[in-house]
Image (tube, rainbow, N blue to C red):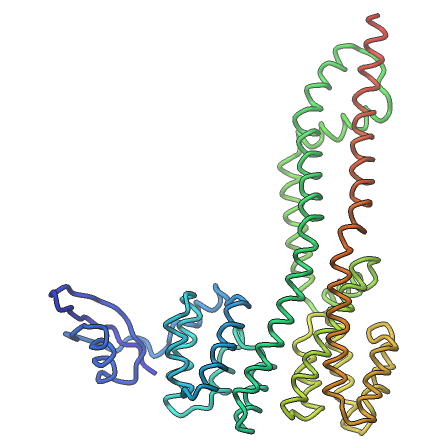
Length: 403
């Protein structure tokens, strides 16, 4: 669909220049007329919408996607056409990039394209799971129900991540403050005390000499240390983007004492919730596993679900396949899924599993501060004690010599 550059005039005679994506000049004239403008000149610009480069720089927050899905569900249930509902949502959206995306969805639908196919053109905004569920809703004539399920799932996913971020905010702030204070003491305070210690000529304790050595190195080579740290972070970030790097990082995180169990519970909650949502929209089980595997954040869960989906083609039961990954899928998950398969109520069982693990994550996050605080206090106490001893011992020795 072309993008027109136009010149229009208002009733007061003021000129206005702009761009608009429309089918033809007639639609452009109508759109401007609705805004009280008269078209005086136009030309076709790019056939693209500008989303390509803009999409690489911007993203749509989860909250806005939830509102979009929820309001779209309400309007379609109320009898709005998809195109009219999208036009209304575009006018209410404050995010410019998302507004552009919604306008393109509207134009595609008006041109006769299926809504799900139009959504698939924007993978940065709408996940594969989202697109497939909408496609199933279109095929069954129950799009409003599918959008309702999607909004509920997205709310639960967002709530889960929000709880994790909220619980980790306090420990992260404490660690940043600790590091900042340590650097400030080492770079600013210790060098001033070092001058006093050197002038006294007294023999300094080992702890003091080590602290002075670290301080001197940071003061003299601080720029190189900072460049080296940034370089190391860049290298690690690049390695984390490779297949082997992500696998190694995921393995490390899954084995971590506090973080590992949290990641497993979050992954199991998202897997169960996605499985329940896809099965409720009558998407075949093999296709469901293929879709879910591509939405998982952990590469180990992704690979496990890919292998499980491939094995399902041969008729092997899901629970039997998951037994190959005992570290990722605990006995409770496997047994519940086995019961769901035997009873033909896998979607209901998966939903109950998701609720169970979401509650587990909620409880873990609520107790996280009480778990981490003693560790942080211990580390902080040891650091303060070590620095205090390194500074106070030589001062005490000097006061005795003077006395």
